[in-house]
Image 1 (cartoon, rainbow, N blue to C red):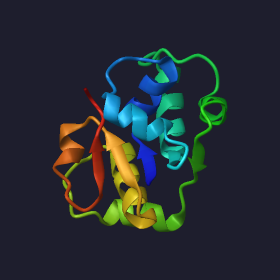
Image 2 (cartoon, rainbow, N blue to C red; image 1 turned 135 degrees about the horizontal axis):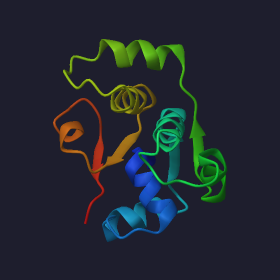
Image 3 (cartoon, one colour; image 1 turned 30 degrees about the horizontal axis):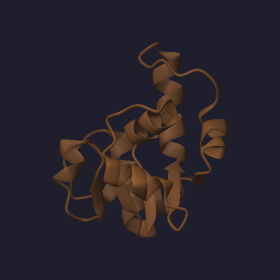
Image 4 (cartoon, rainbow, N blue to C red; image 1 turned 180 degrees about the vertical axis):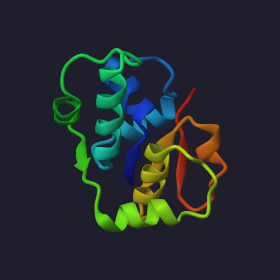
Length: 128
């Protein structure tokens, strides 16, 4: 299975936090699954950490590598799809993650009720 971690899930995993369900934790840890973290999440972390809204020390890019995840770049096609989604959600980061999951046939791993309402992508609910 190919997974795309939502920003919160990536942060929880990196911090060893408990909110991730055992089943999702097992899916992320399964060596047969490819686990991606979007450049959009790196961008979101950098912005929020820079504004003091998120305590994250170090480099998100390095954390992706240290966790043996795969980086997922943002492409013009992803941006075009994110802008064209038939979905009222205004968060640009969430829109990008949904668009990337859709375009790349990835399962989006998240704990966001607003994303859960979008039916155009495969999803795994991360919270225990």
